[in-house]
Length: 214
Image (cartoon, rainbow, N blue to C red; front, side, top):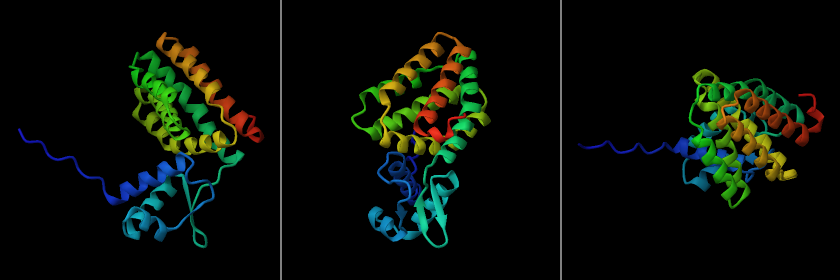
């Protein structure tokens, strides 16, 4: 039986993922200009897929489009961090509670923790951290809830990248991740949800003290 070849990602998708990776790993810093002609030359494409990728990233909140300044990486401040993390505080612990209650597999979360521990640089660790949190809420049983959290996932990662660049706190957060997963694997839905809520709130309070009232 013949299998259809795997579709090759479009040029726009390729450019979008490359720019997103640069933003979320800190290689492209907040406020940095994203010049279409420079990016097109870098990726060996025309300006059209670059322009479309930037528009999509603006829709997800990672890029800001200005009539006068063009496209730039979104700046992060305490107000922006509070907005994003407020959504996470409202939704993510509840999603984890449901994941644990329905006894969904948490092996992807365990794997993400291992990847974070074995990461060779901040970029790998950051991506593993994102996967850990997503592995907790994705199997919650409510696709709409999971999609809502996915919508703020990139912005949360941008906040984290900025905070970690200023003051790395990997070890503290890794210990909290292990405790959250321990409670979840033990079937303690309320305890895991509470630990996750404390973990999320503590991070933004520590990194952005102006927004401490979360």
